[in-house]
Structures are given as C-alpha cells and as structure tokens.
Image 1 (tube, helix red, strand yellow):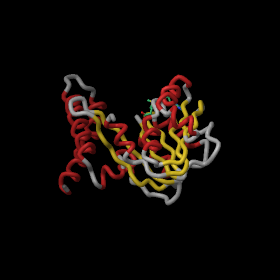
Image 2: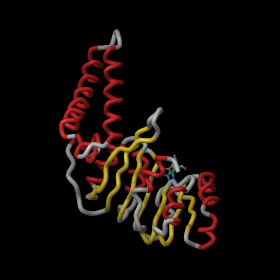
Image 3: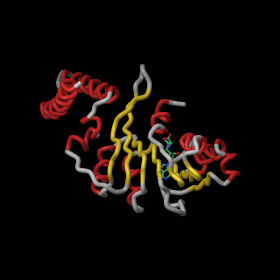
Length: 224
Ligand SMILES: C[S@@+](CC[C@H](N)C(=O)[O-])C[C@H]1O[C@@H](n2cnc3c(N)ncnc32)[C@H](O)[C@@H]1O
C-alpha cells in the first residue's frame, strides 16, 4: 500500500455507514470493509470511469450489498447520514464546496491537495472540532507532503492565524514531516531571495515568509 493511502487509512475508525467521496481506486473503502470498520460503505465519484476502478476492486462487497457505488457530485448521491466521510486527494476548495452543501458529517477525514488553510477556516467557522491537523510525507528521494485534517461536526475550536496557515498540530507538536517540509521551504525561499536582479518588493515579501518559517523552526527546535 502506498504511504499516502496507508497514512490516510490510519486515521479511519469504525462507522456503521462510511462514505468515500471521490473514491477513484477505492483502496480506502477496501481497507474499511476488509478490517470490519464499517457495516456498509458508499463509494462515490463524479466520474463514472473512475468509479469503475473501485467497483472492480470491491466487486465482492458490492455483490454482498455492503458497498454501494454512486456516480455523483460530492455527497449528492448518498441517501442516508454517514457516521464517517472521507474526502481525500482533492483540492481544498472542492472539498469545501462539497461539505458546504450539506450538514457537516458526524466525523470526517480530509486530505486536501492544496488550500488546506481554507479548509481549516471553513471547519472552524462551521463549529467543527478538529482532532488531528498534521502534515505527513511520502517518499525519501522525491518527498511529497500532504495535510491530514480529521475531526467531528461539533465541539468547536479556536485557531490562531499561524495555526490556520500551517496546521495546528504541526505547530503544537511538530513532527518530522512538517519540519522537513519547513526546512525545504526555507531553502527554496533563500534561493529565490539570492537570485540576482530580484525586485525589492518581491524580496521583502519572500523575506517576510522566510522569517515566519525560521520562527516556526526556531520554536520547534527549541522545544524538541
Ligand atoms: C486524485 S483522485 C483521489 C482518489 C482518492 N480519494 C485518493 O485520495 O487516492 C480524485 C478523485 O475525485 C473525483 N472527484 C473530483 N471532484 C469530485 C466531486 N465534486 N465529487 C465526487 N468526486 C469528485 C475525481 O473524479 C477523482 O476520481
């Protein structure tokens, strides 16, 4: 199993009804049903071709009636409340647009590919409680970084501006993946700032970002 898929699965827990929105291959639903973490699961994708991949993987469960495939936009084709909703591998704005059209799911696991900050703001403004908000990585040579945001509909949270931008748990209890991402980002910024002929306004903006990251790294390394 790919590291990204395994990392997402490690945040999935029992729900009578589970929904995998934008399921594509269906690996996460296979994990849920295979580990008896759901009585039934909806696999939904806006693309019939993508859904076919999951349908092939989950044929036996579909035959048993434990897995229900739907071609739909977001949660639109799901006919009952789901205890746990997974939306992974999509842009943050798409995730927000899917969640905004319904009452928030009782519990959710989200893995936005970009715009995680917007997702955090949306969830906090909606009164959700975020249980996990951290970065993980995949690969050793060409390392990729992903954000994982999991929580529940109610409970509420207060986030600082920095927590919205970088992820709450990354700042409170920084992990190796986040620190590596920050060091990489700092290196890239230093390189851009050192380029000959850089405009002063661009240099000032990049320097501001670099100093913010240096501050985060300083705080993290001080508490390690
Ligand atoms: C990159 S794949 C991610 C697959 C899987 N969730 C994962 O994390 O590995 C994104 C999938 O989301 C589907 N998708 C995009 N927008 C959607 C929407 N609004 N509703 C349902 N599915 C959507 C795409 O068709 C595609 O299959």
